[in-house]
Length: 478
Image (cartoon, rainbow, N blue to C red; front, top):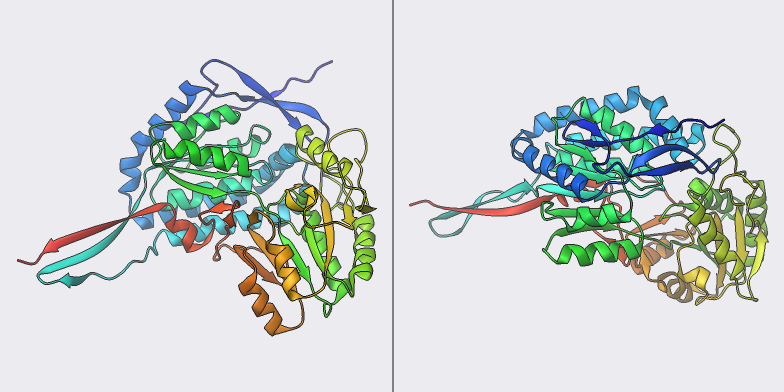
């Protein structure tokens, strides 16, 4: 007896639609490994329709007042909050995430972020008008860029959708958003919620695969492309966008160093780092998965971290005792497994290092020690529940190791020495430096990296401004 799969649909110009050619993709629940829905495999015709809808809606939405956009976003935030249980259920089915943690750790920040950008819509600041040439007055206008093509990842499908659409729409742009092919369900539900509030064409959702995303980025209509994803995907987007000089906003991979000095409270650091490393199965670009520990406390720290890993539980979404659920898909399980299988002989697996169960894509909390700076697992993003540990002898070597990767998104420093913390925060080449903590984010502060972690900021007034353009207007006083 087979269960009929739920049918997800694109949301274009205010209505739900199948792909024009009828093609679909099966969507799999990673906690079970079984398909539960089908999603459109959108092609060029679907992308054309969404872009046309967004372009048609742009002039009117651009000309709305900031207060009107604020009111609309506040209504969206209220509606998301009112339908929180539905969204959590959809996200858990998307990702296998624990229901309780998704409800407590993801929904409230999402709502807060929408409300933040609702407020930001009315606070665009610029230089005051003035006379910089005799007989002439200059003013600065900040305007929306136009239609924005946006691609969201599978690790935080709902929250990343918010990070994409909220600032863009607050600034007066219209949006065509593509969720990951493995996690479209919660974004389609968001479209249902948002569609009851925004004018048709302002917010559109096109489901599909990598080729769908490429068609969106290469399309002639969008003035800007925004992606959260892998470095490879970001490079492809930047290359495609360069052909017609589109603006690009990239939030790509990470390999966050966690620098632990000898004066640190080991027990407290281990407790916090384990949570920051294993939350969401380590599928977070800022996850605390690359620990650098002073050599004098290395052995004690590793032993404590291995115990914390052994005490950390992964399991099904309705299990209230689990910290994280499965990896998102079969390919990601293969990638994480491959990193462990290819470990060099000098590496030591202190905890975990294996799949959990034979159903779904669960992987044990893992600690690997004995690693060298040029090892594959140090240089490349694992994106799984794997924490590596290296030792360092002094501050200079800690900085050398921390900065010695191609990623530069986030980092943290653990020490009781305030002066040292300030020195390290200056020397670490990362877009974010936490001190004696790791992973908290707030809507008011920017999130974004350097180097191959991309450019542009999410959240904050900086993230809002990324979705605007600057125009100089000069008028004669004669």
